[in-house]
Image (cartoon, rainbow, N blue to C red; front, side, top):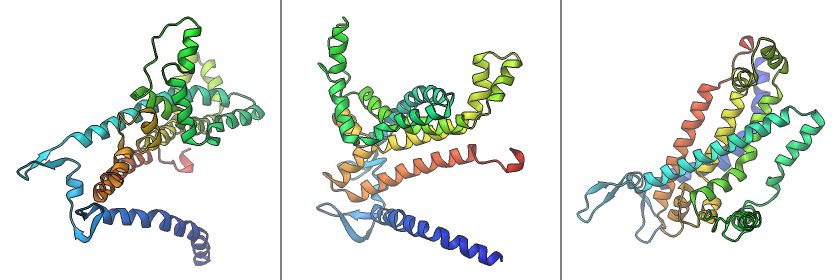
Length: 296
């Protein structure tokens, strides 16, 4: 009987395993192979010639005497990417938590409509959304003219092509990924716990910090990861709203596979980014691992 159950489980998950294996494991394996090859004289790679120079190039470069020197250029790009991603995550959390909390407090029929509104940005291509933000944020754009019409002479917003413009665009793009996990946690919240907190003398702030936030913590953590990790790999938004002035990790990887034709280094950068992503996921799994049913 046990063998039969295991056999059924195997055949049920086999299609998903094959799909993931073909479309994820095989490309990752190919990228791993390319990352340890030697760069060709005219770009691409020398197949079969192995070298770890691509990984060494992340931290070191060679001077005119062919000596290795510590190079912080790529570390600065990674630091900028992490900083912008963290800024976007904070903005999305500040906007997303009140939104999710408000939706969770509404009647069921209205909740569905509000969730529907949250998902509307997904209907539009990300390229179109970023061009729309360019029209909004540029000097003489809709926001600048609106402030002038209200009597605020800003002298030009000067936001476009800055890290703030990139963060605004990323926040708008990934805000639903913050709202939906937090809403999923708050929707299951037993409101009798909040009433009990008020009965025991807690004010609104204590009820929020002692009851609601701890119970919503898994959703908040999931939302932060779902915003932070895609921001690290964002390509279109930094390119358009940053004007190419603020290169992020994805732009650097794209340039290595494109203009620079340094495929091993581009593949190595991709695996360095993947290592950071896996580290974040491991931290989340260790912090918010599911509890056994008997402990719930």
